[in-house]
Amino acid sequence: MKTITTFAILLATTLGAHAQTFTARTIVLHGDTPAVFRGVINTVYLPVPDDFELGPVQSGYFLFTSDDYTITIKDDSGETTQVKNQQMFQLTPSEEQTKQFESILGKPVEVKARLMPRQTRYHRTPILLEVLSFKIIKS
Image 1 (tube, rainbow, N blue to C red):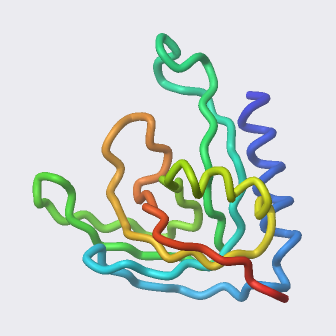
Image 2 (cartoon, helix red, strand yellow; image 1 turned 180 degrees about the vertical axis):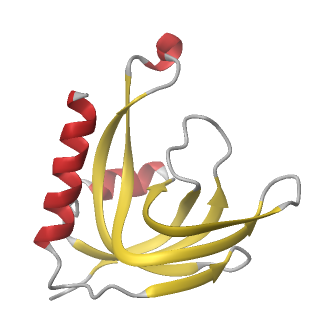
Image 3 (tube, rainbow, N blue to C red; image 1 turned 90 degrees about the vertical axis):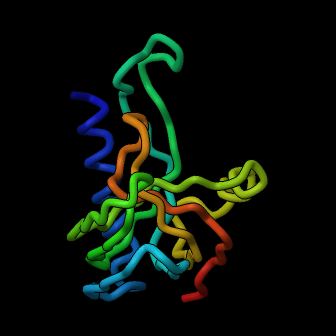
């Protein structure tokens, strides 16, 4: 419960602090081409479904956006899936990008990413973003 409460406070603080930077939009995407997302990147700590290998808590980078995304994407079996109202995305950055994220946490960013469907129970959002590039947005 403490983790969920901490996550809720982090989310409210993150989105509220940068509300003036972003205006909410509804965006429809199809998973066959890279897309650009605007939001704030933060580290999130969540309990894992099986703490045998990873320990009781897993951390990851997530992009929080004020936009509502409707995304249509094909999974590995070729089946089409549609996800609506997604505003939080788990990121899959390279090792080099992970090091660079530390200096931009909580700041407004623009991320170019390839869409990927959730593949394991350790993925926390239905759509993941494979980070291709990112930059800080100057206010």
